[in-house]
Amino acid sequence: MPHLMPDKSSEPTAVPSRRSFGAKADGAGSSSVASRRWLSFLRQATLRFMKTLTLTFLMLGVMAGSGMNISPFPGVDLYVEHGKDIVIADCVSLGTNLNAHGVHSVEVRIIETLKGDKPPGKLTIGTIYTMTPGKRYLLYSMGGSGNGIDFFAFPELSVVEISGSFDLKRLDGKPVTEQVSLLFADRLAHVALSLRELEEEKASLGKATKKQS
Image: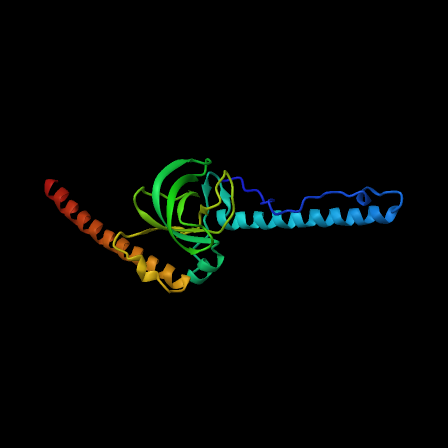
């Protein structure tokens, strides 16, 4: 499981003034103001950390033993609503294992961004799903960062292969939910075709082995 820490890049830096050290001219009043400011800073930092921690559990589910329990697909509307980044990308190369739970890095090249602010170009993601260099995918992330990666594809249907025959122009001008649904339908059609081919192969092999016996 990636070690996710709250993003403190936007946190204000506490720069104490002469007043915050309780100058004699201010007395107890300045000390009280400084204390309130410091407590406010701590509360903001804690809230940011709790939000990040909550998001981490939403992404990863509950760790059980050496496996990962991934929450079931919630439906296209919630899928899109909760997604921070949804992109179409080509798999470039496979990276290394990031932890003992099957999370590994993959280098991809973003072709089109459906949601979020990821620009076109190379990106390293973390995922638990199998990807193949040279193939195109719909990739989905709910956010979070760790190990130098800020795109983790963990939930169900966060890595969905797109067929080479799918024309991306079909997505132009459509809402994100409809774009995602079209890509899901494309994958479903190819999975159904693969299953039929496997059933035919199974039947042929069954006949062949039956004759030999």
